[in-house]
Amino acid sequence: MKKFDIRKKFLSALLLILIFACIAVSADRQAEAQTSKAANIANLFTRVNPSLSAKKAQEYSSIVIEAGEKFKQDPYVIAALIVHESTVNNKAVSKGGDYGLMQIRWKVHAKAIKQRFPKVKKASDMFDARTNIFYGTEIFSDGMKKAGGDWKKGVLRYSAGNKKLVTKVTKTVNELNSNAKKK
Image 1 (cartoon, rainbow, N blue to C red):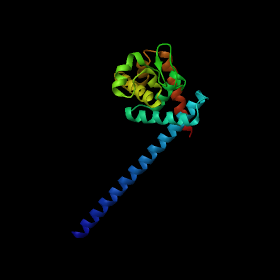
Image 2: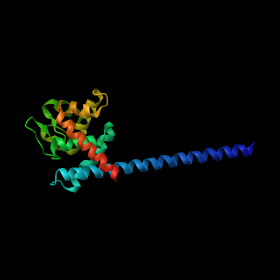
Image 3: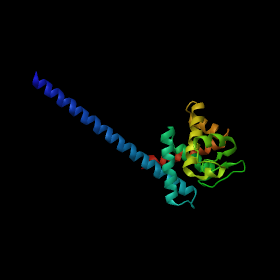
């Protein structure tokens, strides 16, 4: 009986080691995929806005990845929104009063933004890339929930029904996915 118990414990220990090894490999692959996505996004950002430094493009892409993880959204969709909303211009302001990278409509969202981000007091505070991307992703995420998880319908909600934006975002997301497959 003792030999059987020792073998059983040995096999159990071996199984645990294999499980932990698989988890570690999976985590490494996931981190590698995120790094690849961030690089792909940064390349897109500098291509769309040549005046954007590589350092800023990397900073923005890292924030996009982080916001995507937090709100469980595809970072390629977030990046495509940034490209088509502001041309990756952090200081962009539309005639309608939309601010920053994700063109947040201050008049509509000011109260919620101030509650969520206490340091934000005025519209120009939306030029902070992290605040803008996180709040824009949160708005998009809410739209996605209302759209039943369909990201194209989520973009429609985000953009108040702009079908042309959906077409542009779709094209950019497809381009990013295609570039990722080539690597």
